[in-house]
Length: 371
Image 1 (cartoon, one colour):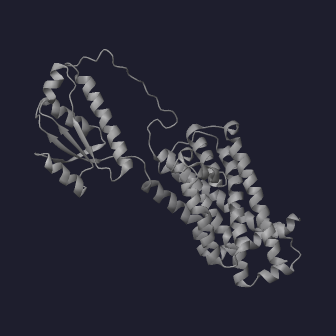
Image 2 (tube, one colour; image 1 turned 60 degrees about the horizontal axis):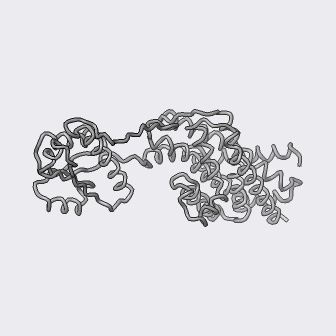
């Protein structure tokens, strides 16, 4: 392999990219648009939960409990009921997600030290929101009960826990979503960019000319890869900058380590696109294949949204073949925890293996095409 020919091939690919504004738009604008769009659209925070209230006690204690729900920032009172049968109608229409019913004996039970019962009805149509809403409601009611037990006395057998959150003290879901988004978006964009390279040569009729030159197959693959590696690194830099400036995500770890591991990941992702491009001669088919090979696996099986540990054992095994799995761990670890290579080295080794296998398969597929 001669680096002079490799650089000549890289220069040729860069010239083709400069003449193709659609590819440049895909390369630079799409990642930025996706991270801003998904960063705002995808959230695990549940706020402004529609709350309906039936206060049968009409006491100062019941009003304080209702105010505790409203001032928590998680609930928004949209309905005040007079009768129990009104609650079912509102839940059916979907105007409320949670109904709070306070019985007539609520204040008297609190005053005499008895357990004061309240009734919480939930709309389980959205199981995740219902579970979170129930946890919020339980916490508010427990705090209220402790504060008002027997006129403010704390139960003697009550055990309290002091909780401390590390790495994401504010529990903002964007702090975990945005670093994962960088991995998911770049795995899609990288594969789509290189999926068009060799297929473009076939559609433009320049593959025969390329095959007639003394350029070796490895020089073609590496030369075509270099411009996209540069573009990919710039895209990651833009995405990381947007995450920090637009969403306020902290970057606790080493920028240099993130750069090195990003380079490993991009080589593997771009190599996958090269493999698809060498195997498929149509740009349309290559694009579709790249989306199928990256989008759903990166979104569903990388640990970005769903915990890998909670998946069935078969799917957990499949995730080891998803490169985005390792880069999601890298971005979250460096962004939020500030961990170093002593923690991330298994992910680095996995990405090296994936890049080696991907480029090897791309080289083998390309050799068959021009032989």
